[in-house]
Length: 578
Image (cartoon, rainbow, N blue to C red; front, side, top):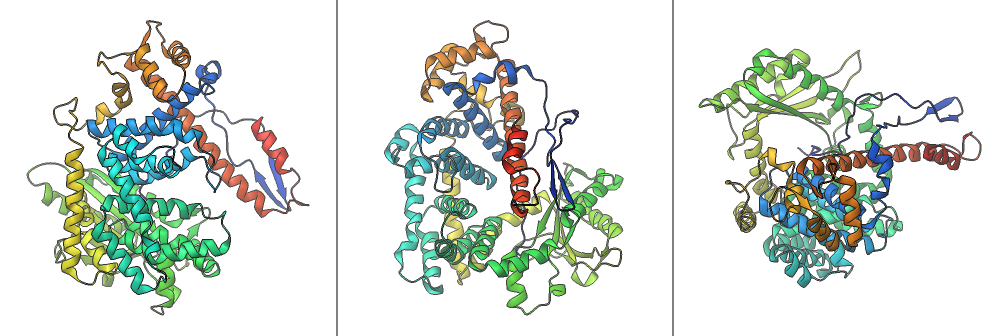
């Protein structure tokens, strides 16, 4: 089943309620009134006014970017070894000043923005620090601002190797003159056989980032690139187990290759929404709330999560055309996956199974189950060991017919085993017709991952296990800056990182004065933690601003700027700015 499971989304920092601003901007579109799309959230924090010049200083700005990028990446990566933290921090320190010096990308983004987008995608895929470091440095290497030899000397052999491999993978499509099915399959097999799988995944992420920003190119180039992605990279992404990446590559390629067909399918799928909110989100919240208040389930599990999904546009199109189905026969448009974490103990596995069946009972209390579509892979696992409960429910209401919604229920352990089994299955499904060859390639992938994990354990850790606990993750940056390990960041240590970022020492002294609350000439962990919270606060304002900008841009483009809009776009921007 080819369905989206979104992994991560930008998080917004929720402060306590703040009074809405009194000014409201109204745009009249005939009889439709668009009220201001967002309510500004402004907290009276002294640093926003008295310390605003911190961002204007070269060193201060880059330290803020360094801390913000490192924190966002490590939050998405979860547990991270001490050596992995140091590697990622070094890569960011090397790349940020170089990225600032590069021109805008052809699609209009800053080079730093592109590098961070790539690295965040890799973090969402749970790649290791070497791969993410290579993703950060890839735009710098492409621009010739740093060589792979420099990366090897300053960052490490592993990151340099991945950069070299990914540049080779990028050139693979040029090995054939005609991109037919046979040559595309041969190229995919070549990549899986001869290149580091992590370098292949890095190249796939680069392709996805490119496809997300393809609008600036002429249409014929968009279609040429999309055809290559559809034939080579989307199946390759499926082959290495990154299914959601494969689905998005397919959908983006579909959109550029067949825009009218895409629009028809997209419109039909979007019709399954309730007002402005997707139905899958409505059902997700309804189920999650019911599971959390169920007393029987609460005695079995310590955590429960529900992921929602929509079927991809491309796979929907294939079912409608290739299988000859009618729209009402495409049942797996909506779907939820429930992941349960049972309470620990000797009978943990048995409790987990009971929790799955209890969850099914909760689902049955909410919606009508379709018995002929229920599959119990817990009682009767698949041959490859896959275990899960599958069921379909009728979510039609008020006489309005809707597609059936599929629900998968499994424990956290079952989910991990299902993901581990994805690689060999998807290798087989993506054009490798020999199951034994698929197993061999999977073994190569696993060996490469284990080797990388061992290499990242080389640098001694500050704790006994070599892995940071959740409590210690919050002060990763502080410990990386505290070179002498005395529990404080002195002016020399702050100046060192400023110089590595290419900023003058005077910026370090000014920053120390701003952050050193007790004026003892150094920064304690509490003082630096306050600075990190400021960085997080400003990052969230930027996210809100981008969201508001996107909504306004869409609304303004829909309207006729010549006659219907009573407030011009320029005036609107001016008012919002004020």
